Length: 539
Ligand code: SF4
Ligand code: SF4
Image (cartoon, protein in one colour):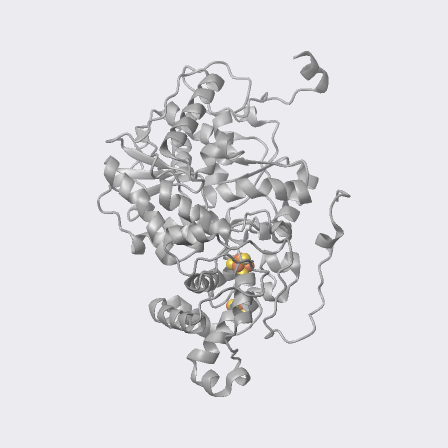
């Protein structure tokens, strides 16, 4: 462990805390919570109680009738979402989920056990919505809804990345992520949200993407990428933007055209589309796959998801292809059809290159880039030279939303095995459905809560460390924009010497393009083969 690490992150208290868990008091200590949403973002999105405040303030400036709003909001949601009522009533406190949350593993705070996280809201449900709770109160496991409970909800529902790992182990299928989503949705009714969620949501609503990039900025970025890729591969490349009548609309997370290492994934997609001659377009309006509505409310999720479909309709495409994103796919897979779909105006997706019909996308009409590429490889449509990635020893992090959220487990591995020669899996209980979260998902990837992110990311980092020490792994691949943004810091902190990349970056390295020049560099402009020090000096 590097010496620079503050000792406190390694101190994990494993003794049970003294005192009653029902006491809602929390300490908003620097490094473990996120700042509140700015009033301009609440106003933009039409959310209530826009004001200046911070979680560490004594006075949260809640509306005078906040208690009525929360209880009525709970009642409405208990009637509307059967899952919410079921999850409130079902838990038998068996404890199977208790040690499965990365935030509990990294912090040892009992209220980060999924069972107890859910109990924070379940206890209020018991007090106000069950007969025994109304009569016997705390004797029946109920808790009074007081202002400190709201502060406690805020603290712990923004220390849950909605990753659903706990649900895999619950014998009753209780999904604590859904409970967190309800908790956040209720908090939003009284104006309690974090800026790292609401600013991207507001930007997305205004300009189509999280970063607030205007259409001309989007075009500049895409054109720049096309030009740079042309130089790397020696083939002129143009990317169609807002092209009406294209067969396919391609939607990616905005980080792909504005962040690193995401950008190299973008180069990988563009190389692939050029090579297979795909008739596609990107859109300067549906310029974001990610959906921060998932972390706000069902209503917000629906609003942000709709823009992709509106744009597909406007451009007259047949179907939609989506890039390496996490929550875009969770929204698509789990909610789109009941929120905005089925998208009857589009056609069932068919690969124009292989003829494969993507039956799984009949309702959403949207295919994941890994499904699309795996199908191309499977049908022998790509010429690949995996030795170009020989300097890399690769492992793969299953992003929670694509793995647990939609079951994309084999396709990325199939691509990786075809584009590189050195692939090593992390331990079985840390991958696939049991994958550990990056610790920064669901809008928590900001800097002010870095300590909590590093604590929450500890189990994932630990598994990477294991394969680094055993096999010399030096690259962690993933297919989620939040992972690509947050895993580098996690790797630097806990592991060291491990880079992060998208799967389509490796594909772009290995892809032998028709008519291209003899390539010696990868998509990062670095030599395919690791140069020895003295060769580099003479190069
Ligand atoms: S959804 Fe993930 S972060 Fe939330 S309680 Fe479950 S395991 Fe923890
Ligand atoms: S595993 Fe399920 S039933 Fe058991 S304590 Fe956790 S949420 Fe409750």
